[in-house]
Length: 266
Image 1 (tube, rainbow, N blue to C red):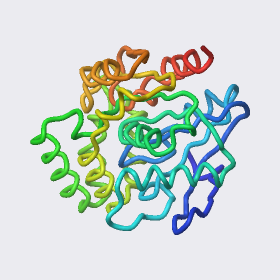
Image 2: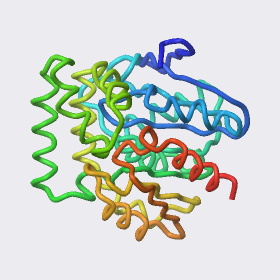
Image 3: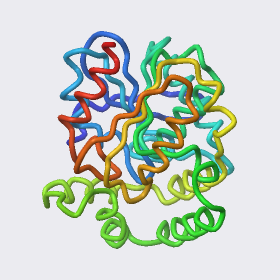
Image 4: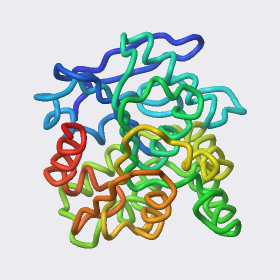
């Protein structure tokens, strides 16, 4: 995806880039760490017939500015709420993938009236809420180490685990281009925020319709975590996409979009 169609808005000290397409109810897309709004190319195209789709580059990613240090998940959530005000979105369906799914949960914590329906894709109840402490520490150490690598060296270390072994070369190349644009500072802050986050106290209080949407071969956030979230969120739905890895929206966009459209039309 090219830089065409990128807009920008100032939110306090943050310069935030975003992409927008379509008309209808607002659907806000929140990307994972190391990524930016480019990973939503097939959703900006495929869902714009039914929704006003808004995909931001979170502070610390893509074409947005870096946040200060420290910057916790709650800070991103408050910034996201102010961003939505700035682009005229009072209430929206919110879809978060991976790190973006943790952010979507935190947005519900700080501003529940903002969310109409919630979709949590290939994510966690925070790393601390879904993973053993040792695994959290190992992930943070890896992220801190890899954040110091040149982009050309980082991308090959991460791209394969985002998808299944059957992922097409073109898909790997597209993701490599996205990863090569990572922000070292933002990456470190997002990893720390993920490790510090634990939403297990929040999930039983969620009162909006929620879809837990997962790739069945997700190697970074296994389907067992999908069942954890599904079991903790009252009345939630669980949909597992066959032959999809961690970034299921890119690997199986038609199935992903169909599940989103069905849930939001219910």
